[in-house]
Each structure stands twice: as structure tokens, then as C-alpha cells.
Image (cartoon, rainbow, N blue to C red; front, side, top):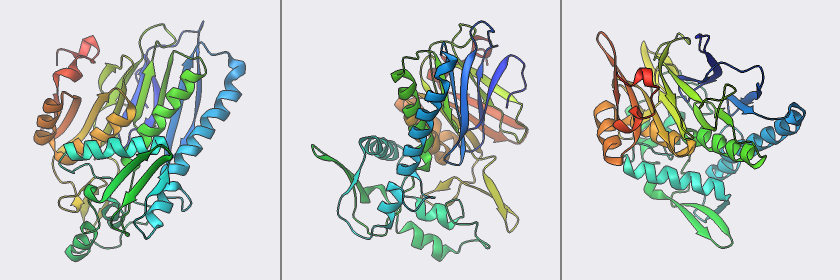
Length: 351
């Protein structure tokens, strides 16, 4: 949550730790209708301006139904989800998936290839091995043999989306392959909620699921929605920067909150597919602004795995709006691309 009295906090933990909040004091003449709750192991929040309060129950029902549908598709914690059934399937025949799920996987594969396979949605065996999946934390450090065995079961080249007139299908050429879409799940759900809200004739809103946010139009004060990026600290009231989304999606991935300690070592939930181990570099937070929350959600994880220098080089090559926070001996260093700076609140553009 953001303590600044001029900010409306979304009270949502971004992917792996940072907080985003919609900025701007409320206007009592046109207050926002806010619907919030839990989904996918995190929180969601939908703020809408100009909505008749009597429509809130109907909208809440639609929102919760959409989130339930998305969770039923992507969850690795539910054995009967579409993704879990695909992971349990010990064969190589194409399996039916929704058009939305196909788009999410295609986006993930594209970003994965551009990040030199560092954003890898097949990394599930390693995520589970290190205790960040549906299974519990390991009681001891995985051995190199276990890591090598898990790495042998991953690889984007083994996964393919088939789009046909009769539907979309997902195919793996290794029966034991385990796909994990948690890296894009929040963005996926956020985009769906944004479309749902617009489909109900609402043009001024801010939607967030976990660390993914999309906004359109203006806030209750009649100004553009703004979002605050939290400092990489366990204190939830420290704002690093504020951006005007201008109708775009934003997502942050960080390594400083979602972790556990084992054998005296602090282990991040972000796994490097190349080594099979949690990342150890000094990049602690990556924020990406993109046309959709799904796109931003996919890029932020890949950039986090790459580390500061490689992430910045790739962001510049791809003309991405990226904001990186790196841990240094005397504090934190901020690095951003020119594309991101264009979204900063005017007071922050001089940094």
C-alpha cells in the first residue's frame, strides 16, 4: 500500500513484490466504484469511474466469473485446470486450448525466443524442484544431478501452438513436459478484465491483477490514471517513481520479496533456465510498459532473468519501455530506456 495521502493504493503485490497504485485524490462528486478480491493466489482490483452503483453486483459477478475461467485455464495448483490436464497428459498429440490461452502461449514463446530462452514457460520442473510451484519447499538444496535431470525436461523448442479453423491446440514432443504460465497469468487475467469492463460501456477504469495493471481514460479527479512503482524494500510505503500509463499495460517483476532461505542462503523464486538455479545477480526489479498487460508481464520476467546489462541491451534493441532497479553497495541504481521516461510523471523526468 502507498502511504502518500495523494495516492489511491491498489493494495496489490506485483508479481514478485513491488506495489502499484492508482494515483490522484478521489472526487466526491464522481467517486470510483471499486470491486476487489483474491484470485490466482494474489489480489485483483477494478476501479471504475462513472458507473451507476446499482450495477456493481452485476459487474462483480461477471468479474469473478471471468477470473474463475482464467484460473481454470492456467492454474498449476488445480489438477482439473486445462493446463494441469495438459501437463498430466503423457503423450504428444495436440490438445485443445482456448483462443486466449493460445495467444498467451504464442506471446510467451515469442518473448522467450527474443530473450534467448531466458523467459521459458517450460521451466516448471525447475520451479517445482526449487519449491516455488504447487509442491512444498525442499527440505534440502537440490543436487546438481537433480537440476540436470529437470533441465533435460525443458525447452521452448519442444512446445508448439497449432491454430486451425476448428480451434487451437497445444502440442509437446516430450510427454513429461510441464508448462508453467504463472509468469504471464496476471497479465492474461488483467487484459481479460479490461475487455470485460469496456464491454460494459465503461471507458474510465484501472484494472489490476497481482503485479499487472491496465488503465483507460481518467481517474475520479478527471485526470489520467497514474501508477506508483514501489522501492525494492520490505517496507510497503516507499514509492520509487510514478508513471502515467496513457492507456497502456504495466507489469513489474522483482526478486526481493518472493523468496525463502535454505542452508543459510536466500533463494529467489526467479529461476535461470540456463543454470537451473535461482538468479543471483543484482537486478532486483524490472518494470515494463507495453500495449497489453500480457506483453508487459512476459517481458518483465525475461528481463529479470537476464540481469541489468543484458536486460537493458535487449530493451534498447526491442525499443521497450523498461525501468530497472539494481542493488549496489551503497543503495540502488535506477536505469531506464528513453521509451519508459516518456511515461514518467513530470516531477520524475529529471532523474
